[in-house]
Amino acid sequence: MSERTTRKHICRVAKLMHRFQLVDGSAGNISVRLDEDRILITPSGLIKAFLEPHQLLIIGLDGRKIMADTPETRHLKPSSESLMHLEVYRRRADVNAVIHAHPSYATALTIAGLDMQRYTIPEAITLLGTIPNAPYATPATTEEGAAIADLIPYHDAIMLSYHGSLTVGRDLWEAYARLETLEHTAKLTFLVNQLGGGQPLDADQMQKLIDMRKKMGLAHAVEPISTP
Image (cartoon, rainbow, N blue to C red; front, side, top):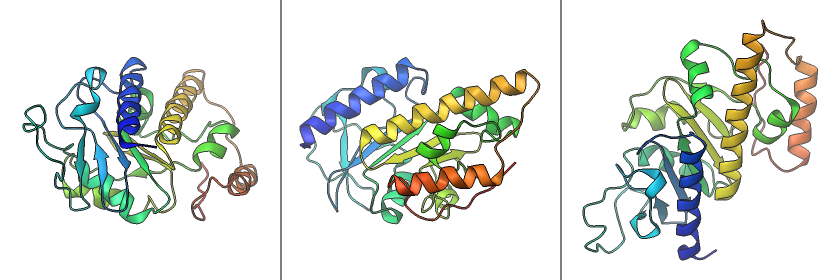
């Protein structure tokens, strides 16, 4: 896919995230790996619903802008959470897209201390694998990369305590689809809790789904399984 097309797709995903309330205002960030040395990423401070392709920035693996400045982009800075994205790319050669969002239900569950996988559905385990909660990290600091460093080698979706979600994919649309599935799963968990709770999948059932995920080529590594 050309850089020009990739820019258009990132903006389309940004608008979808805003439309479905997966982010608000300028919150959240999206990046795509262009090649071994360059990452295309959303700028800091711009509202996702109105993002334009020319506003996206190219950074190197050190986080610095490497694209030529223009009057329209000179004032823009890469996402303040670029370091978290770069940590993913350093640890996952198979990942070519990263999305950080603020899905309401999923984020609320982490604040309430509830495990969103307790009442998950089989499709969510197959598509997402297990979903750990990363320890709290101050946004826009090196703490974020450290918080996910030991989790991202095994997981395609991670909850950032008090701060939203991180989903990754082999391409941008896979990362986005995982975000939608994550929030849908969180809504189901919320509803089941509202109804008084239910019976979670047991360890054997979870293992079968993880094995299916591996056979489908969706599992990057052996994923630790934790049951409620």
